[in-house]
Length: 87
Image 1: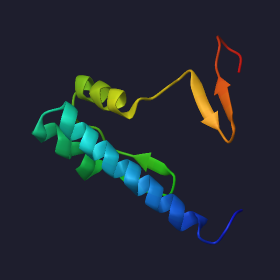
Image 2 (image 1 turned 90 degrees about the vertical axis):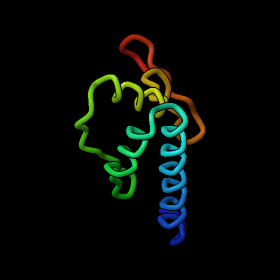
Image 3 (image 1 turned 60 degrees about the horizontal axis):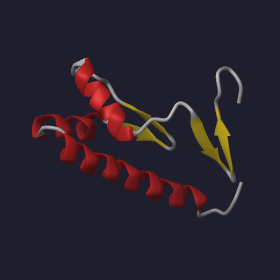
């Protein structure tokens, strides 16, 4: 779907977001921890994963940096909101 350039553009945008994550991590945590996500963060197209061997507090710090939102999700030109068990 879309143009032939769309996958390349997507890869560039997600790469930019990865670099932004690394910079934000350096701002908020110790240097020894800030290198960990950069070394272990793996991405294949739109999926990301990491093997986490640090403690839970550091994981919670990374989640705060990622700013995960469990209540709303922008999708195309609408904002999906979760209220109790309904969307």
